[in-house]
Length: 255
Image (cartoon, rainbow, N blue to C red):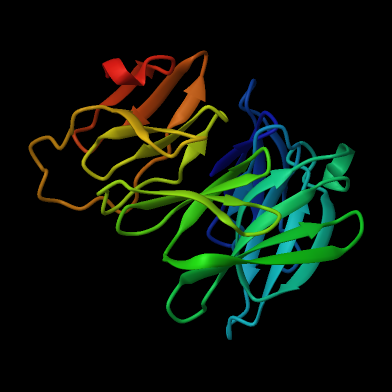
């Protein structure tokens, strides 16, 4: 499931996607997405579209489809070279055609992130920026021309979207982390042990973290770590002990 544009996108076992109105709970539309067997959507703040991507069996290409979550209509559909994972978008016009969608280019065998890829649907152009250092099983987010990438093992990096140049790197000691989230001032990362970390987005320094929240079943490994949510000046996060907690986003040093 993914929330986008006030609509909850729910994918059924047969690949049918249902758009549920976030305000009323009513069904707005229900249909298959052409060319996508089991769509899993990504959505980004400030972008009215939702994106689903599927990699070919041999890892040589990725089909990307942009969908209007309010109507279920396909806005554009393209096949791009390589094994790509969407991480964000930068908009410059209605319908997503004036901006770019950003991806990590992954090694299809070892899942190493090798480059940043930007696709501009308005022009059909693709730009590839090799990373200075390959990152193992990385995920990321983009903000104001910078990609923030988190790799397995705890390496968090800021990379210039245009050149692929590494701006800073921080070893967080987090073995398994969430997708990073940023407001441009701080980068927030959730940890498998329940910690929430805050990193200065410009300097790459750790400025605060919450205590671990493992609970009684701390010996178990979670399938995934939920990404923090930013709302109303607070940061919301979940932990393995079952807690959902909120902290003041303006004062991570006091966490």
